Length: 388
Image 1: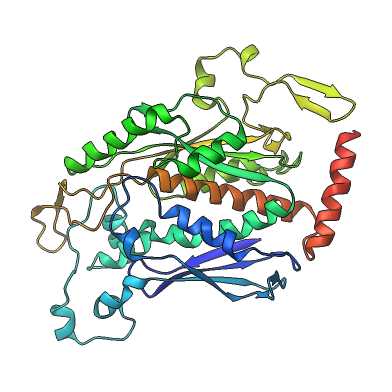
Image 2 (image 1 turned 135 degrees about the vertical axis):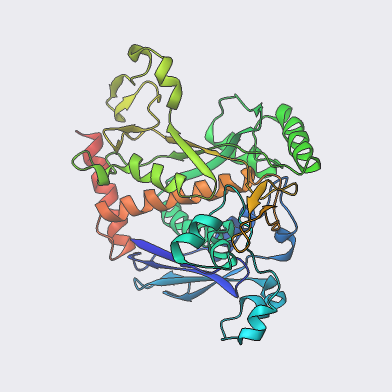
């Protein structure tokens, strides 16, 4: 399986095309749509989330509620495009129109792709960079992830996410899967502990009042993954490495860890490795999950637990200093619409990126032309694993 996304932040639409998905997989469009709505929620989100509805449509690859095995196109219209048709239209414009163009950006924002992208692609209007590098693109990725979650759901593989930290506010509790799902779906910041939600909201409010932004940490959990997804034989087939790449590919993410993560640096090995045990009913299992469900780049059958750290959004309403690329004079950076925090929404994006990687690993390992064949093969494989 592979996918590509397209679209600019204020262009007519964002879209994705997914290749290699099995035929005959029933899809619940309403459930998929709900995933896109989740991305728009969370305390600290700005006006853009009130403008866009993020409703998606299948452009191809689905007939009568089931996949065809052909490429699947997912399309989400940008409702705000009607206000940007002259600025973001695809038709050629005259030199006079170009000189009068509003919203031309020559003052790159620190922490964004603006300057480096302009230098690389030789753009004098940095809007040509920021429109594509915008986190608006993650809408298409969540749509692809929602499609992949339909596959995982049909295979009894569950996935969810939560926020464990916003600024200095930390949710240190350990919770079961169902509790995380229940509490995060009703939490304004997607934290589980009711005791920290108010402090997290106050942290976001304080950042907004100061014209600043705040980052945090998100966690994704996958329950009931098959044993042996990924591989130890090549670096680029290790599933944990693929997941780490996908997490860091999300806008503003700067770090990733599995299980105990960076705490392993100060923990003796005897307290890190997960002891192996056996039962006649379930076969091999681990007595702990400090390694986050991976050994040697392969899933152990324990829950996958991965966390990512999101830096504060670099668009500030009290902008930092920059340099105008035309005059070379110092200026404050350009201000684009921004949120004081997007950590709750980022947890949804991370969840769907992990869903994509797990689904791809399953489609790589098992016959994937027909969903029913895939499901039968997975059941046979799981029986063999239990009897190993």
